[in-house]
Length: 263
Length: 204
Image (tube, rainbow over all chains, first blue to last red; front, side):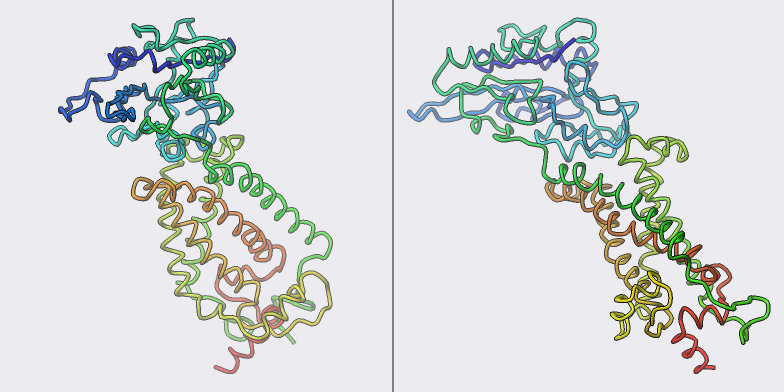
């Protein structure tokens, strides 16, 4: 099927949050009662029932006026995914053939490693169900040739979905057209994400969006250095003990007779 | 039992040793089942990965408690003395036959070193394990380092555990009785721990 990317062109987003609703509908997630906190950002954060969320940020435009930024937040579907690397249960977090990070709740053991290691702070732990939840890039739709539910519903063309190469080119063409410091986000780190942005403001203007996300150093030390050394330690240790036994030999007591006792 | 045999351990010491040993081994085996997906067949013996997680967590508590008991039980006997450096420099007489070995007391320098490593890295593996079990109680950056430190502790302990099992069984025949029936043959003790035999005879 090839690598697929969901492109989020925030310059076209009107903050209607239809994607949020479509996500809930497709994934059969219940609505949550919230309160008016003086912002359109609602619910306030991602949670086990909310895989995607429009974040609203207010930044000064430098001329005494305000810019209202809208960004759809959710799983970035990293190629080098810290969550997949740190998952101890085979099959619970895997890459699909399109590169999406798919979560299988029936194989998940609720260890919380993915919640801790994700550089984008995406998976949220449901304490009641003792499992984390996140976007699967609508694996069940994509595998049937459909686009993700959020893309299907987006009325402005902010969300588009397609082959990775084409989407990267589309993102750069759009960034060039907009100019004014518009950037493409998602192709330069963790070997590329399968959700990308066209950002028409500085990355740092968007709350909760890391400027230089990477697989945490601790995870690399854990999986790339220490894990192979454990194999060396165990195999080497047992090998050395056996080698000792068959070369130098065990340390025995001469003229030792258990029945007769000593001299 | 007094003439031909010497008491090497009390019943309490043996219980602590085996609770620590069995919990430790099961933790290592289940831990390997988590870390290496190629070894996921290990999970079958524990009833699947979820059950293995539960076993790993609660057995960790058993390990931690028995480690604490070990600390109080053996910390005096594991104090290093002047002969220990010399013992280590000749490899305890295990690497070559017929070398001059300094007089060994109740525990040799290798056993003492194992004890120190067990307390330090056993403590670290317990603390980092708790952090992994309850990650939301601590800052994320800190918990991220708990994973590699957990494996580092394993790495520090595994060679000692392998050597300990080897020398406690086929590597030095006659010694395992110290932790089974609690008595070792006097002749065996004279060869491996002459200073200890003198100490015991001096007391009686």
